[in-house]
Length: 159
Image (tube, rainbow, N blue to C red; front, side):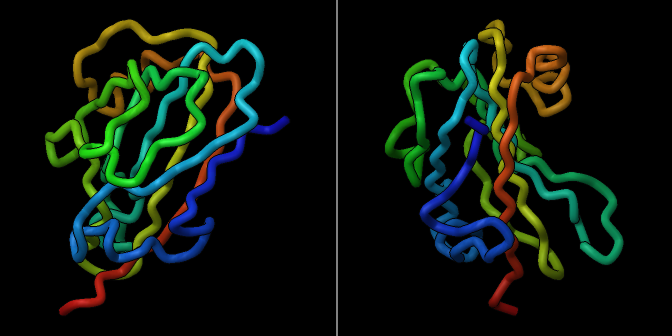
């Protein structure tokens, strides 16, 4: 089996619904996965936007959400996880708003791509507090045994 990541809210390549963005309630999307390989000890989710600030001239990758030590028995994250709860044991990292919660799409200009990347690891990561993306990726190095990706897009509708 191959690790797959899906959302009932959008399919890869399509627009993320506005209620999951800064133009709506800014709640985290529902995500589901299957096919974690044998030997998976934890999962990591990284949601980021490589098109910041302008897709015509990107200068950075903006981090929207970091989760680590998602238990291998989990197969989903519910919509609005901040209010409804993450799988037990899941830890959150610090995004580029300096928050440990989800920050939805809020592109200043143009249509941006939002990469939802799920990694299966052969270890449970040590307690790291609220790491940034670079620290999380360093801790993951050499332990990724499978990965899946779901890409949504968004462009603001209001002027």
